[in-house]
Length: 136
Image 1 (cartoon, rainbow, N blue to C red):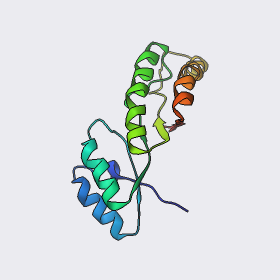
Image 2 (cartoon, rainbow, N blue to C red):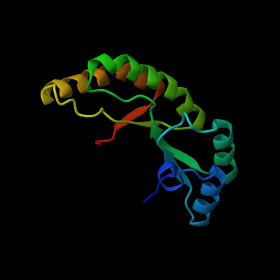
Image 3 (cartoon, rainbow, N blue to C red):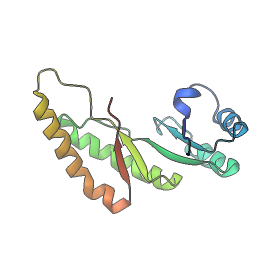
Image 4 (spheres, one colour):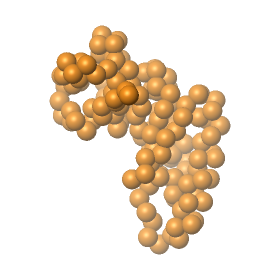
């Protein structure tokens, strides 16, 4: 079994180097995180190389699929996130589907999610990226 530690969850507000040092002391070598937009990517990339770590996955920076009006923002978020994934050697991205819309029938939200994923499929396939849905 391979473990992947979410550094945003366990090391929030702490320096990246501190997280890497502690995780390495436990024999761990794989991380994940929620947001790439708040990371110093040069530092992150340097630490990955220095410690021999890999990134298993991270979240896209826009993730509303159950509202068709947000699909453009969702796709734009993928377009911003994919180059970061490639830079860090990541082939899996995480998304959520959005908060439940109380005034929209559940079935309509499911159709919107499916349609949003269909729109994303060509971009993901062209870049060799798998999109994982986190069921929050």
